[in-house]
Image (cartoon, rainbow, N blue to C red; front, side):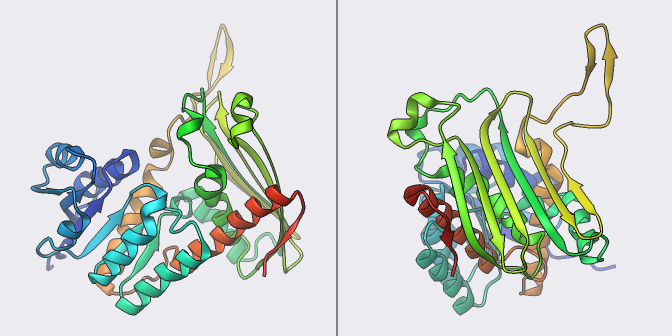
Length: 339
């Protein structure tokens, strides 16, 4: 049986999630090869390249895009740089995997989508929860009609505490752009064919109330009405002391599916202190399979020249539209229509 030619990958961004993606390519997948890493921070790319056994490292994205034999890139820069780097990669003819959010404005989202389309390159977005087994099986049950028509949908993200970040270093509206963006994608994906028509959001600084006056938000609840009559709720909080809590639920006319569990496994400890379970504490542990599976799917798309089953640029735009409606709803203190 002939061997599959590895896809040559360049990683742009050597921070926390970029390093994890690089490790996935280098150590968890056999049909891709990490050949180059770029990061503008002095020494960051070189340090990660040395750790992962990669020969080429750059501080300039343009140099990485000129690396010989490069097939595709993984974009894991800070969110504010995603669109410009994506367009640059598309113009260089490289297939693109971009972490969420793809853009921070609808205009930039359209610019990114147009760039990939004009270049004829696959564009996949890093909505990794779609690849988690529980969420994938939940969607399959919905597609098979096992719960009937979706009526009430819920998705939540509670990041593990204690919260130790500096609020001054967290960009404004991060809870919508980077945290709840996953939940918005889930609500859209678990309600196939439906379009959001109205959003009402409430938000507060409950974890760090001392940062409220600077515009910092660490807690939010979002209500979304869809054109098929269904109603959805998304919620987020930056400090769940008991662990990394990611869950979803779809209640339908004929039944219900639930997805996600903060517990690491079904093992339960019974001892002198009572009953307890170990819980997830990091996204890269909780969703290691999903993170790996999404890249494997992307690499298949690179070989085929077409994205078949991954989240697209249009999916990213749809989730962003909800995030922007949330920001408007908070600012105007009223429901906002999505046109």
